Amino acid sequence: MNIEKIIKFYFLFVMIVCSTVAVGSDKNTQTLVANVLGYNSVEHSTGEIDDRKIDFEISKEKEVLYVVPGAKDVNIMKITFKTYDDEMAVNGLSLKISGVDPENIDRAVLKSGEEILASGRIGDGIILFGNVKYRTDKTSAGELSVVIDVDKNSKVGDRIRLDIENSEDVYMIVGGKTFNLKNSFPLKGNPLSIVAIRSWMPGYTAPKNVVPVQ
Image (cartoon, rainbow, N blue to C red; front, side, top):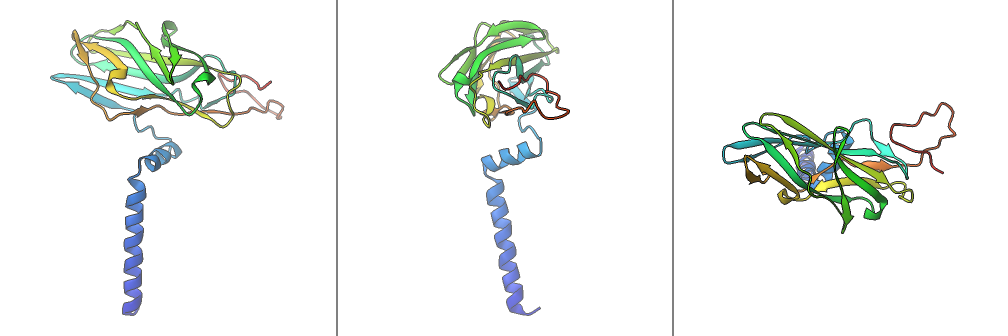
């Protein structure tokens, strides 16, 4: 191999490395790769204040990957908390609607198990759950679910996502004091795709939480 080929190979190698670094550092690219690989970049987060610590996790029910327009009682987000040395109260939660027109969500409720804690007020692209009054003992884990109804006029191909934009969107009291999560925001939930189901296909079985297209 002569010196000219070595130089050309070297510059090609440098260009590939620089391009990979530049593309990989882009947040949108990172999100795309995370979604393709099935990895939730906000699956587990830890917040700390003084000597207190909270585990905070948002995820989605794995079997609920897509819905059709008009689907009811869709568990789109699961939120898990755990404190280590104090009791905790969640008094409010605000979620930004992304990927769809907010009018395509007919109803939203916040649940603990089968108990409805609060009905969401939908407006200005936000789902606001106020006066939640959800409590856990110290060292106990708590789990909340966000359940929605999808409007029958929703657009096939859209992807519904609920995000927590900043620490003030989760109103928490820990040990009698306001607790702010020390995370990188926004925390983006996993998307839920809206699809058209062809119920006439041989051997078709409808997934959980979907309704047939009329």
